[in-house]
Length: 119
Image 1: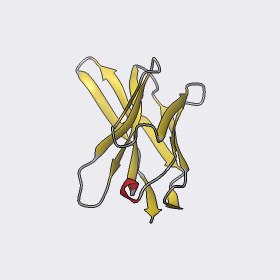
Image 2 (image 1 turned 60 degrees about the horizontal axis):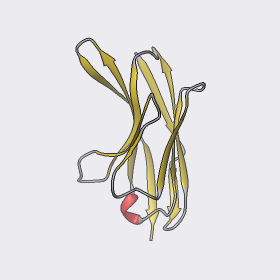
Image 3 (image 1 turned 45 degrees about the vertical axis):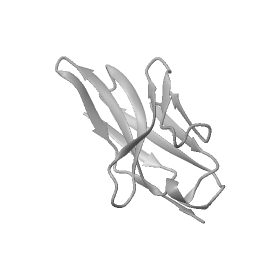
Image 4 (image 1 turned 120 degrees about the horizontal axis):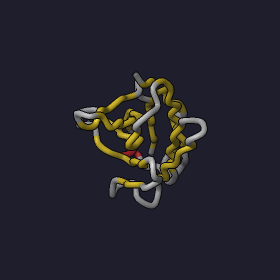
């Protein structure tokens, strides 16, 4: 199993910055990618950014140029630097780890950290 613990959420004014961290522990093998997703009230969970084991990144169009995902493999930690935050970035942010198995990809999720951006 894999455990994911997020931190770094909070309340910030529009235009401000936050840095989210996600520390992974447990069975850390066959990791395909790690990433961040978010869910605002009344909305479905959506992809924010992902980073593969090889370092390739992918971003939602809405956060390109403002958010940066990175990872520290030695610490099994993934980060999300969020700059120029907007009220529409308000959501619960979830860390995701995707593992490759013989039966396909398996997802693990953290408990979520809330980000609130005030106007």
